[in-house]
Amino acid sequence: MRIAWIGKKSPFCGNVTYSREITNALLDRGHEVSFLHFAQEESEPDNWPKFQEVPLPFIYKSQVYTIPTFKATKVLTDSLREIKPDIVHASLTLSPLDFILPEICEQLNLPLIATFHTPFAGKGAKLISGTQLLAYQLYAPFLVNYDRVIVFSQIQRELLARMGVREENVAVIPNGVDTTKYSPGPSQIKAEFQAERLFVYQGRIAPEKNVEPLLRAWKQSAMEIDSKLLIVGDGPLKPSLQPFYGADEGIIWLGFIADENRRIEILRGADVFILPSLVEGLSLSLLEAMASGLACLATDVGADGEVLEKGAGVVLNTKTVRSQLRTLLPLFQDHPELTTVLGQKARKRVLERYTLSNNITHLEQLYREVLLQRPLPLSHRL
Image (cartoon, rainbow, N blue to C red; front, side):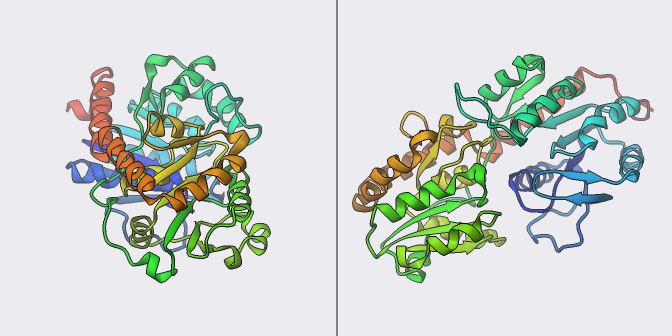
């Protein structure tokens, strides 16, 4: 199958990881993949697959949104006409092109699928004001023009349905993780940081990630000197937080780590993974930690609470993160047998429900279903 993938390669975020992992896996299954993305001059990580690339010109690009040039629409249209894909799959990234893609694909008679990543709050909670709420309100009227929309959980499917997107056109395909790559194994990370017990946060240092309650809870818990908290990631709040939470409290700021092998080494050597977010989609970082055998604590937002439910981890309440962690951090420090059991359950949950292999199988089934429902382009019938 020939697939035109429209996504992101930079700057780093969950959408970038999603595009990399899915396109890698599709190539491994024997599909042809062309990757259309807003080109960046910065060097790209070397673990991207080798495929035909089409750079789309842009004026501005960030982790949150992208502003293309006026020429980008023509470049995209001409490229799709030349590639002649069987299907177009867009990993939506808050760009104006997301809204005109259905029109372009309709003109070219190409089936179009979207993955809608935008984070959301948990069951019964209101969407956080700002970008997340705006994104759902903006996108819902346009998502009806896609042949299918992929989301990560049933909660998200129901949310879009309430905004007018037909449920039968929304497919729930959770994120998946490579459980061979992300797996328990040897690591020297504890020796490197002189730690007996190692806790990890990995993600952006931004308001929606709610990192400060974790830092405050750690500081107030008076953790042992040989217990360390690694903060992996970067973001706008880092300069204001790092001076107040540092090595004296056992908190080590590692910044953004591009090297995947280094991130895997950290996970394999750690005991506990903590994700105190206010909104999420379905965190790949959480799934990677679970697959690596860590005991995991995460808030009940997006699909993260669903991932950890029924004993696969500890689900935190967004309103009481700090007080809960003040109790739980010493508990997990003093009872290694507890982290061992939870880590085993976490990996088992991923193997049962969230493997990359199953994800790709469901995606291939969706592609075939959509293709069967649409007439082939004239060029494919000749």
